[in-house]
Image (cartoon, rainbow, N blue to C red; front, top):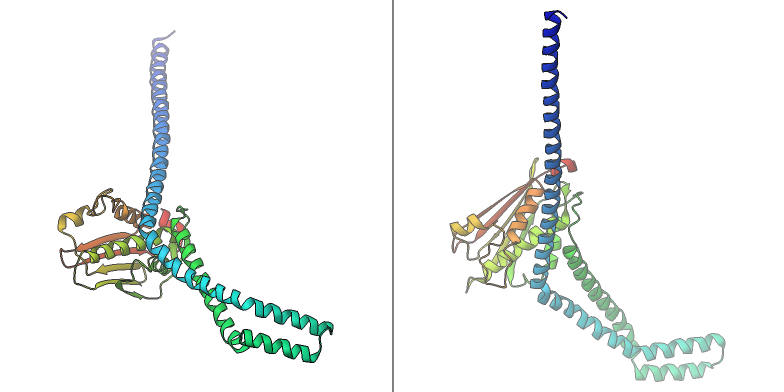
Length: 323
């Protein structure tokens, strides 16, 4: 074997060994990277599940705050619906007697004189004019009361239902309307002013954005309640331009110092007494805004009230939000 051939073989073997080593190293690194990526995906799934649990827990805590007001909101229409049904029940014997009399007339088993006598007796027992005037009103009031109860329950269910992460083309004012209906009793002692411009449709998770408005309105009410001798005022502005939808919630409450403003989005940070706040409300609001690719700012000074400003990019494709 010539020296050239021998040297070539040695070089080839060295190159092959180096190549094999590199391939083995690349395979090891690729396997390690794949395992790391798998672990990272599992961690992301766990974090998303934990976030969903935290959001649902905060919803349940909010529902606890709302429970007394909701009970009052339901009891009022329930009371007059029940009262109206008792009145209708009082009219039932007269209506039943008239139906039976009509059946006898159709069967020709009663004379004209007997019909007249029965009608006079029934009119004396229960004025026909009273029945005619009141029955429709009683039924209408009862129907309205039951519809109001149904609306309250539906709003509660919509708010309490676990977030489904589904984005759909929607009008953001639907979330605001739902929050205002849900908080009717809580906000009854506040002057709530809403200025909403017609908005373009954009991809939103309305179940989630509803929680934004509920939390911001409850926080505004709480801040106003801390100021004595002043009528609470809460202003909500919703507008848009060609690129963004803007939401502003302001109040004339107690306001916050700079340190509190800087920490307001921290999980479990709260200025409320023990047992009155979870410290997750604004952290969840921040998370929902970010999920919609939006931004949120809080401007506040002690004794001068607070302004919360959010803006959401108009998304005509769900990928614009989920990217």
